[in-house]
Image (cartoon, rainbow, N blue to C red; front, side, top):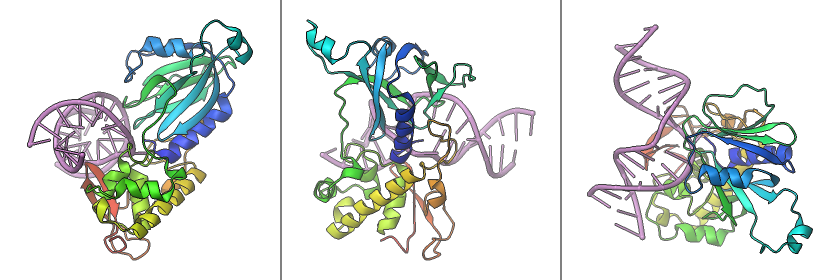
Length: 281
DNA sequence: AATGAAACCTGACAGC
DNA sequence: TGCTGTCAGGTTTCAT
């Protein structure tokens, strides 16, 4: 479901609502066994921790935790050697949602985690398709370049010698983190590049245009709260509006907004890809 | 090293 | 009403 703008919107919403709150207790369902952390490890790290900050890294939501009641002063005096503070990492997969709500709010089907907060509210993780992942990390570092902060030279270097289609390269989170299917198609349209073009054949000038298109598209989408296609809503349950700005994604067979040529849909690396054959070369 | 298909899951929707 | 097939914003794994 969520790409960079949706995850950014959710992270900002969560930051304003739960920063500083303390996790009093944790319930975890049977199923969301994530990649590395066991349910026990997650519960142990979360319970009695304070949520210092919430931020986005690529498509991950990072909750920076600090142990409750153990401020800097006390840990300095402690005999326990200082360890990096823990982080709760949430990846929403395709259908994951994080909601902050009152305890009496009806528990949705496919709710896999409930955190009771000292403020009296609950933070819940709901994910019908169960592609989402929860884990605990220390010193979390994601692979790839953050697109909104990317300088041109490192961006250029990512594609220079890759023969893979540029669309596939953009979706590769080890290269660039946060761009997904919608924003790859939209960025390529605005840059005038066909999704199947081999990355290595794209000129320096075109890649410069691509990077700026990516930034413009992502920033516009963030400003509009992301794209709500089927069921995406942010942490406050609000829909985004960037879907109204899509120029090619989901517009197969409709006229290009620039030249009226019918928008094509092809499959690249198993993903639907939309483009205008006249505007994109 | 690098494509690509399949797998992981559930739900929505179209067509019959 | 209900069955079948297709599709979905993501990522990993296995085969070629």
